[in-house]
Length: 311
Image (cartoon, rainbow, N blue to C red; front, side, top):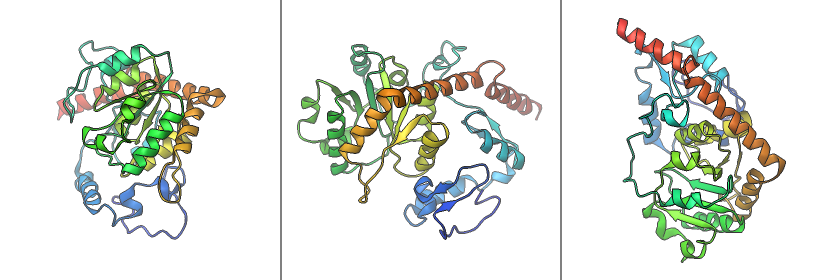
């Protein structure tokens, strides 16, 4: 919108920003390279360059589905020809129409074994907190300590993915001391984990792929956005889709162990937890409906292929 409809430098003269088809956004809900343009100049250039030929494109395909972002999709469709084709996760996790479509066949990291799946097999339904902040997030040592202590204090089973390069930041002997309730790994097959019956909630950095996977598999979320589009994604998870809670930071930008424990209990326990789970399962059904035969994304893919063949 900023680039194509109303190009200008954003000036923060008020605490909230209104954009077409979107809820009122506070600064904490906006992409990091938008509300503070000097903070990530290379990322801003990268994103801007992605739209350099926007007006010349014949097709604009989006990894989302109509019911998930109905108002946004409708507004954009009134401006440009767009098609939603998501969620683009393997068929066997959704409509099960393609038996050999079980994985992305692409990973930034070398897959390990399935020890974490065997560990999950020993846990009760809906009892595990899965924690992963993606392949790029870089948490400080103090923040990792708060997170580790919060997970321990929750007295919940947890599966925590910590990259090998980050492992030295964990509290001394944490993996061993927490082994009764927790498992710390360097990598795991995320789709398999989210689809596992033991999964109770997903503590996530709110990257778009992770959010789509969680919604498509009916898993409520603990939103811990870091940068780029993640704050906006978290806003939708909590306020629009009502499938999770946002973990609050303190005045120093830190997430404290008490807040982590409180949020885990909110998502995993009581009527509030049940409500979030019901909402997540509802989005799972909508996602399946979109990619199933005759669904909105299924039809859009067919239309795109037909148009491509004709041209």
